[in-house]
Every structure is written in structure tokens, then in C-alpha cells.
Image (tube, rainbow, N blue to C red; front, side):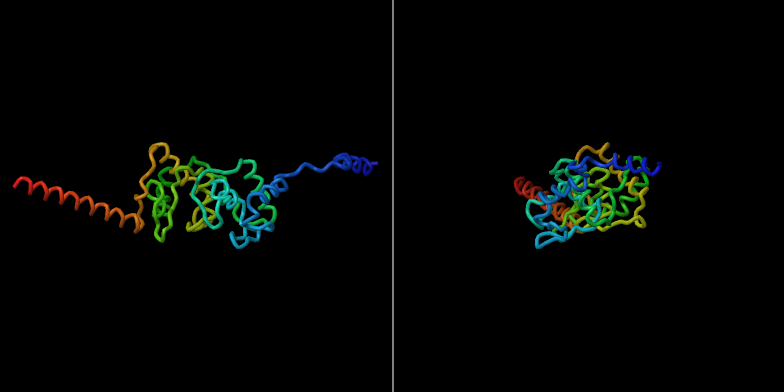
Length: 238
């Protein structure tokens, strides 16, 4: 009797004959992936002549690249900076779910909270981030025609994702290098910068060799112009 009741309950839970189960995020994302991503990364996510494979890269990687608008790329192999999402959030979430379902692995989307220690976050930023992103996180040249982008428009989650996946020239920081608490403190410090400095930071505010050299040339030019003006003034007095 009990077995019959259990069987009846199980049958009642099944969808009616001819009625498909509602698609989950992963199945819904397959169509979006084929539309926006497969032409470069391949229908099987194994990459191709114009893009690398993305099997097993992790949800954080896909969410960062699509959420910041770096992908979908308008031109293969040419990535743009943070231009904002080019797809609706629901579509982004579906693509992330689908790619993650094909081959699990890679860093998950981190849970980041901007409610940490500002002073500690400032110290961590100076030690790990400032030499590329600049004193005010406004971005800076890092040499070799490479540019560390401004963090002005990045969300706290996107900052955490970048720390974990290491996009472009950025190194990847795992839990051993920067803990979850460290990430929270860094984004707390960045949030404090936005609250106190509404203007964009100068890209030259960097400890890298290229910005400092450029600043030196500018200073030399200003001094030369001042010397010329002084010399011209002396001649006129004569």
C-alpha cells in the first residue's frame, strides 16, 4: 500500500505527456551562446582561429568578460575595455550558466561585500594593484602598448572577478595570495575613492616606468617653454 502511494506521488510530479519540462538557465543559455559567442569560440566551446577555448574557464571568467562588455567582441582578437554590458543581464546569466554546465571548473563568481576595512584595503591596493592601475585607480600605461584600465566603472563583483581570473595582462590572485577578506577590503577602499573623488584620476598617477617617463618629458617641455619666454623678454627690454 505504501509503495503504491509513493509511486502515485512520483507519477503526479512528472509533467503531462507531450509537455516538456520548463528550460533551466543552462538550456536557455545555449541558444544565446550560439547566437553571440559560437562564431568565434566554437559551438563546442573549444575555440577556433579567432578565439581561445572557454571550456572549464569558470563562471567568474565568463561573467566578467560579458558583463563588462569586453565580449561579444565586434572584431575577433580585438578586446575593448570596460564599455558596459552589451546584452541584457538575463541573457548574460544564461550564457554563464550554459558555459559552466558544459565543463565545470574555474573560479566561481565571488561574493564580494564593500563593507570591509578601508585602511587595510588601501594598503592591499598599494601593494598589489597601484603599480598598474594607478594611485587613484584611474588606469595607466604599463608598457608594451598595454593599458591597465580604470576601475571607476567596475562593480564590486567585477573587481573580485578580475582578481580571481586575471584578465588580459593582469595576474591571477588565488585565495592564498588574496583572501576573500582581502578582496572585500580592496573593494571597500575603491568604493571610498568613488565617494570622495568624483572626478577621474589622472592616468599618469602610476609607479610604472612609462607614465613616469612621460611625466618627465612634459615637465622638461614646460621648463623649456618657460626659459624661452624669459629669454625673449630680456631681449625686448634691451
